[in-house]
Image 1 (cartoon, rainbow, N blue to C red):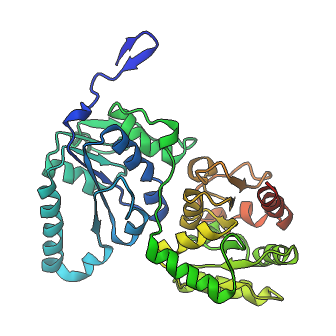
Image 2 (cartoon, rainbow, N blue to C red; image 1 turned 120 degrees about the vertical axis):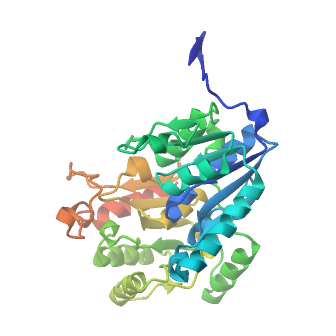
Image 3 (cartoon, one colour; image 1 turned 90 degrees about the vertical axis):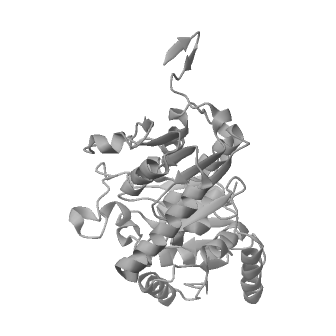
Length: 367
């Protein structure tokens, strides 16, 4: 880098006028993919002439479809492995041919997945950036024209994703760093019908999504039921949601059984887009470290997020309209472990009182 007054110019910055098509790869879970959405926004703002595509797992595609900065969303289905050797080769080849036909000048790989490195080698873009990964061979680093520094647990993942652009010489403006998730007209209509069936209108209910795919991130069922009863006693209507998985639906059933007055429930009934439409209609969202929490943040719904072993500085709700509730008596958090001692139960979560969470709820509802 070369110093120029108070500015610093990146010697190997990418000449943006040479980028006609770009591919951004994010092969992770739903929340991770949503937290990459500002990368598309910032890149499009800086390279308006470029068509920008995404490559994600098929089950996470709804996090990015309808994003105004994205031209095409390419997908990899985790179920391809069930097709047998010949079947998998056919679908993999079809994906490669589709990507090759796009003629990418730039590839941005946002995870440590080896597929991104191999695609950079096979597609031969003029420029590419991937993360520095400890312990990887020279082959990994040599797959990219630029390597991004990572490994900062105090840096939010949104900024870590955007660091890939900074490494290329693009400095994101503060207003460009927002999350983007578009539910779409079909999802909005479906949710409006559900709410009408409950006799509800928009902004007249609190959306509670108690579960995460990782149960060691979840608050005890009894505490969540007590919180919902406080909401109901204060005159708030509650709508509960859960993913279609049996574990999450059983958690909701256990909560409902503890309530004197069961809450409205859409357990396992919503697509990701419909979940987003529901959350946007709510006056408040309450949940744990999960994709629905990130969805709430993306849509600007006031969010109360409970965090235990995962790091709230890195994974907290990316919005100013949020309160994060964490234990003040467990200096060992965030540990990133699957419960204390690997026991699937996190003391830093079970120690959070209903009063702790209720204070955060009141703070947001009274603003």
